Structure formats: C-alpha cells, structure tokens
Length: 307
Figure (cartoon, rainbow, N blue to C red):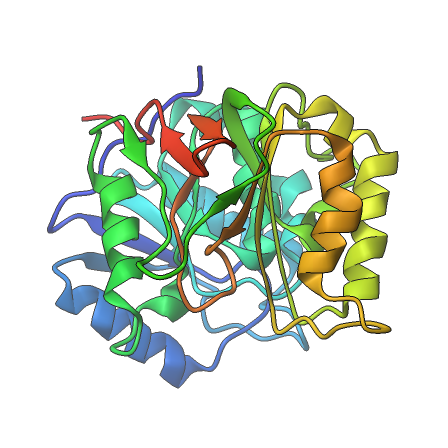
C-alpha cells in the first residue's frame, strides 16, 4: 500500500515550481494571488520564472527546485505552474530514497504525468492527477476546485470519482476490478517507454487522456503501449477525454476506443473528465480504486492523504 502525504489545511504552505516549460511571469503572479485568496501560503522555487528556450532552466535547476520543496518543512503541497515538455529530464536528478521519507502532496497533469507516476513507482507515495497552478483562476469551474480540495484535504472513503452533472461515465460491462491507479497523459507515458522510468501497469488500473493530437497519432501511441505490454499487465482501463483531438480519415476518438480499446477485453470506463479538459476530476495516482464497468463508476477505496 502506498504511503499517503499529510492532508492539506487552510493556511498551509504551497511550494510553486516550474518543472517543464516556462510560463509568463504575469500569469504566474496572477495565479499565485488567486491561490493565496483561498487561504494558502506560497513559497517559490528559485527558478520559477526562468526561461531557457522552451524549458524553464536546466534539468538540474528544475530538479533542485523540486528537491528543495521536499526538504522544506514549511511546504505541505508542491504545485507545478504547468506541464509543457521536459519534465522527464529532471528524474535522474531526484533522490527517490530521500523523497520516500518526505512524502508531500504533488498535483498536476500533462507532462507532470511522468513525475506523478515516478514518485509513486520509485518513492512509494500517492500523487494527484489534478490541478496545476495555471488552473487557479476565476473562470475555473467550481467542480474542479471541489474535486481538488476533496482529494487533497479529506480522508473520507469510499468516495466516488465522478464527472460533473450532464457528463455521465460509461462502462463496457466486463467486470468489477480494483487496483491502484496509474497513468495520465498518453503522450507523456509513451515517452517513458524504454527508459528507467517506464510506467509499470502490473495489477493497476490505467488512466489515459490526451490533447491536441490527431486521432491517427493517438492510435499510434495506444498501439505502442499495447506492444509494450501495458494493457496486458493492467486489470482495468479508464479512458479520459481527448481534448481538441481532430478526426483522422473520418475516424473519431470514440470510434478509436470502440475499435482498439474495447477488443482488449478489459473492464473499461470511458468519458472521464480529467487532465486537459475544462472539467478536471481529481484522481489519486497510487491509491486503490474500484472500477465497476457494469454501473459505470469509479470509487476510491482508500484515501489519498492522511491526518
């Protein structure tokens, strides 16, 4: 069973880091102000505003910022400003043995996916496929904040991971399975294959979502995961949205799921609103959930945090 970080409370300190691509300083400052308006304190990594082309500083600098947040006793939660590219390059610089002894809430999606899964896989604690700093703004749907604070602040279980009203989940009726959730952004996960940080799906429920990729590219990535044995090893699948993913040769995302994912014969939930979509269900990477493909539900069986 994965270790749980301490629950977030009002007045706690959040460490802000930039681990992949840079973000405009004005946007960062505005998002920090909104986060503070929610009753949280903030400490900044040294390289939060850094920019080195399409990266926010060197890999070593970004990794140092992350390690410093884990070492800082004031910091309860670590919140990357965004994903982008390059997060995988910080992994060789991380001391996972140290991180195992200092678990903290880490939230994000997109390229942060590789960090979320590496922390669970190599440091042994639960992380959260949920909001980034860039999402802390007035026009973010209340549902997203409700999901975020419920999963990072409460130990109440069982708890349904559900979409907002009017966006029902769907199941394929092939069974009820339980296991820790792993996964996230499809492109980012494929990028771990053949590396020391390759995602391990054995006995797990695999979550996938994508953004801005044409469906033929999504097909290519799914097939790469299949050939790498990631679907054979998992016990169930959660397919999130493919946000702004154009059809290819008349084939849609839903048709791709029907033609490629359904034949895998795994219990399946589709239409999960998480990651790059407007609505973002918060999902605990490394915590055990139950996938009921008859009822079309996903339920947390253990909390993601502890008191």
